[in-house]
Length: 196
Image 1 (tube, helix red, strand yellow):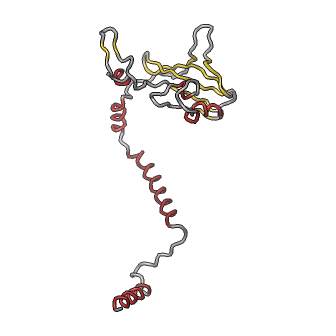
Image 2: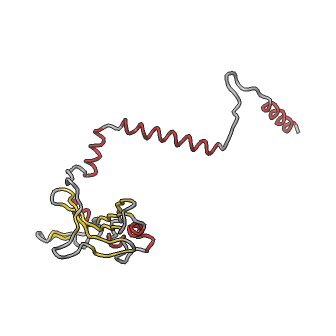
Image 3: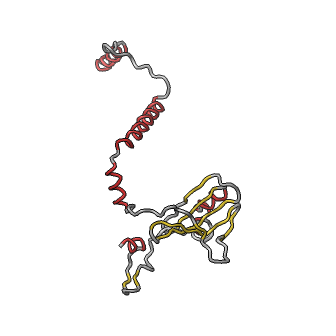
């Protein structure tokens, strides 16, 4: 009973306690969780803007070297329709768009290739759709089996009126990882074989 009376006396004292000198009681208005999240957003926006100004140039050069982005890119980068004489670059048609085989210069004699999904009306957006390394551009455009319709996002974007480029990426398989001139075959994935 004494413990209960002591607790009640403490609570009464806390309820009538005066604020410390130079302070005021906290009067909460609104949702404290929403206010906290908004404060965090304001801080992160300021910190992100300040980080770009503080980022040293040598770090950017180092990152370019680490990622292998040091070679000069082809200039200007112009996409070309990939078709032989008397042939059409159109490889398929979809609901409201045409699919072209295309290629473009990357660096030196290296070229990129892929599919361009070109809407029949003025495009509402221009999108680069990057497939998984084991997916072909044809799979992402819904022209080849291997992906369920909901995963064919390049096709879905083109159907809504977007101009979509789907580059062919070097995959992870190893069936052609070899140099026939020296008779060497390996089980290295294509990416690793090319890098080495």
